[in-house]
Length: 428
Image (cartoon, rainbow, N blue to C red):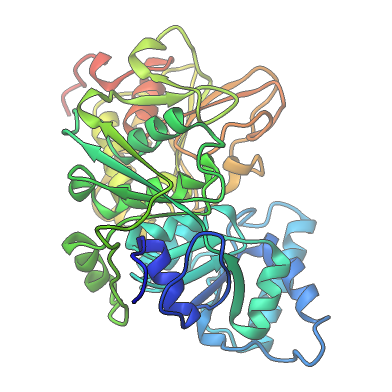
């Protein structure tokens, strides 16, 4: 008789061809999708060519290549990386290559194009591949050599992680979304509180979250050190799959008597809009308590909060208002589809009228690459996922993490602000 298993264990056991697995087991799993961006692909391609007998990838239909980090190319070096990936895609007949202008940021592009679904095993050459757990997949970031091996074999070894079950109870206050829940969770656990563990997000509140909020939380599970973050599959998740054309998937459920490393319960009714101060995502405080911190830049979007729901939240705050004269506000839709939807819904006009710049989909400023690098002493409030020293530019710059509501409100106020602290918008 199989042992009771958590959701992550169920998926790993199925893909290892085993009746059950337990934390600490080292297994080989079949992969449903392998992703790389221009940075991770360059090393992976080089290493793939060193594998004896590996002239063709194992299954070109299960590989996705997405230029995103320094796109459009910011210099000769990044252009060279992109060319290398583009030529490899052609050579290997990899159809799921998302060229600039036809894709965007990988963690937004893949789900919205139906490449991600419940019960899948997905690895990516980017730490925030954990995003796809928002749809009930086992998804984790790996190194480029692991990507190379997966290109050749379609398999990967993994040590089965223990699982931390997090139960979200209560209700959500106004302006509180998935970003606030995950920042609260990281603040409670610490950036090393879930090292090599699966974070299983459960409870009545997560059932209320849209898939965009679930993606945000799974995305940032890595900021607590987790191997993966994962949500149970419900009607909301299945409706999302239907909307993006994802039909072939298997739904797994954790056993009621599964063994968890720990169980954490969080009362969401006590959570206000959150901000993580430098230099760690665990350094969380209420936005309303940080009014004395002035800012120079706001970044709204990227892989963590660059979906249409995030754009709507920012526009809700910015409509009829103007960006503070001392602040630059950069809005980055996560994909071309989101970009176009912003235009169709009139959100782009709201952003431009408020004084924002609307960027092409790119990781850009999140990694200190381009499209918003900070100088010495500048402070940025950002919907991105990391605020390590030097993350967005100069080592003496500062990054404050938050959700779209607070980022937009702060861009208007000129300092960190809870949206409830703003005055009424100008009638339009």
